[in-house]
Image (tube, rainbow, N blue to C red; front, side, top):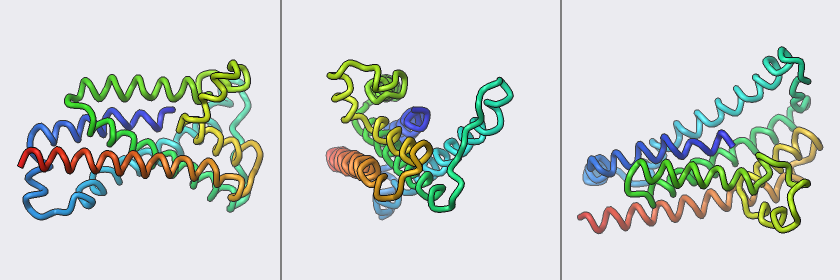
Length: 198
């Protein structure tokens, strides 16, 4: 849930740079749009990965201080790689979603509202706030369309069921497909906006 809130800083930066003409100036210098995107989004991907590691460390070391059970991470190297694959796929989906929101919104305020409400809705229907098994049947079916539900399923497969990479493929595939579609839509929207301004 927290990883998807990268939408607020990403959208604020993109909208500010769009309003100030920074993106147009970079394009006028001949810099390919894919490099501009990589330069903007890669740092947020790294921040998301650090955030995921910090959340795990809190679960292992801080939560037991309050009398709860410590988080148990997978012991084998292959399981840790699987955990990272899920974390990376969630980060890609979150960053692509953030870019799509930034491409759709005209102001930072709009992006904050759309991104924040979108995240809360994805979390609510995805089983982040309320476990899916206590939801009504219709809500459980709706949860199948939430990227947060796919990420949660992936983490459950690795951390609770110690599943294999093959078990993870459905969740990873959905997250990567969502990321790819959101990224393509955002690129198309940005290029269309740049063409209309020139």
